Image 1 (cartoon, rainbow, N blue to C red):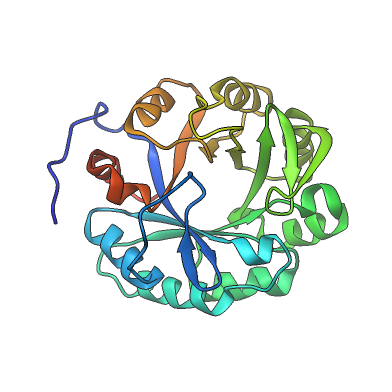
Image 2 (image 1 turned 60 degrees about the horizontal axis):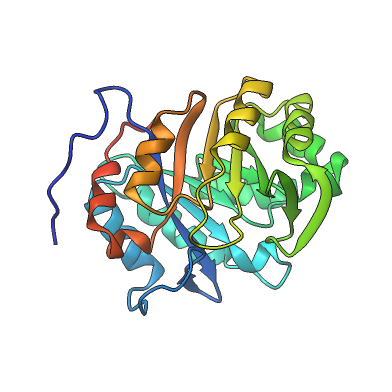
Length: 252
């Protein structure tokens, strides 16, 4: 099915949109509340999104993030799929990347960016080792609810503020930030204030995800200075056809 494309932003000012496949037990799961039954495989869903205009994808290994196995081979298959497309598709990989060997595997498979999260506050030494080899590909993830950091697949809360962790990531040498806003409820408005604070305090380009679930959210995100991109649960594109209009943007 093809959808009418809307002219949403002035030319050259589109948000970079990352349809996000959250992978658990080899399947795509929703992090945005109840979803319709998923009949597509992760590979089929990735193909469909690319066919609809996606030039970026985000892959999150939920099992690895929680320390309960991994979906590494599946992620490798999706990366190979993206490498074989005629149009360039940039892929960001997240979830349980805590060693140089893991990072190298995904880079070798074609990942453009790697997301480091839990190790930022659990293992500064591992962060430094990753930074020494993969600085140009690394993104620091700040998973937070109400401005306070959560970790290990959102399973653990901390007393560390999102701002403090963002500044720490900058001091390590990270050049990009991912702010994952964890809403209390599906109906909560996105925490654009924390996103703005992180971008302003660090001066780093910021991508936001977690609570962005509607076209109105993406329109609002566009108005916030320093916010360069948005992660949106891939399953939502089936439920809201207007989200398809946000997919087109050059890969850079």
